[in-house]
Image (cartoon, rainbow, N blue to C red):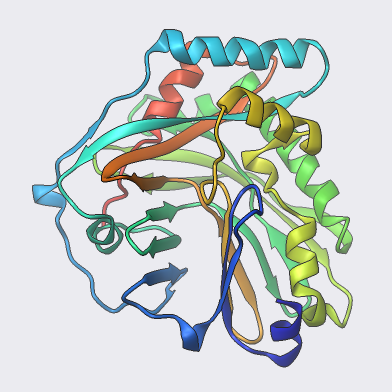
Length: 314
């Protein structure tokens, strides 16, 4: 990534959460028979279909009791002071009458990828952008059903959601300060609207910026790797929290909650790989979750985890 940044060679990167199997491809080497991507409109796929009228999508979430056991383990770690924000995720079996490639073609999101029928991701969440020496991050924390009366006012006034978002903004500010100068919050807690296959969700984001050194293109890989894993899908403090995540979740996340990005030869754009379906021996599993803090209510967190299981409408 450093070498191709220095030479201005366009490339795509797919970095797994554990960084045990990172993938980096020159754009000219990507075979669309194996990998399709759409990064904010920059894509190697012109085909688009709409299966929404015939879509059958059924989710089979784990029981509340099973979720509560993991939630309580996280809460104990918070009480012990080992973490004060942890992104707890679950793997939910889903039944879909489409292939993962068809889901890619049928979905709409800022960051989409289909990889060799192994997984598909349609993420609304940016990780970082780098343009003309300015690095920006857009952490997304706080979700609510748009159909709820006064949804915007409720989500912005929610004590738990406010505390969680403040923590993430502070974490991202600290992360960006590792690679940039003059780090500042440009926009704080603005609303994104996301249309799903069965409802509309509102999500709360912020925008944080910093200024990179003049030779930043020669250090693109160093910059990206210093910021991993993404704070919004891990927690704080990062190192200890990721250890707790591995213990409580009990399995590797692999590419789920990793980072997907595109360097076009000049600028870099990337997203966090949430809203993710994986193929496990012919069975589909949807990965989703949310941030746990001292203010979290387990039933609300459980319902949010289920709400995030969707296919975004075209």
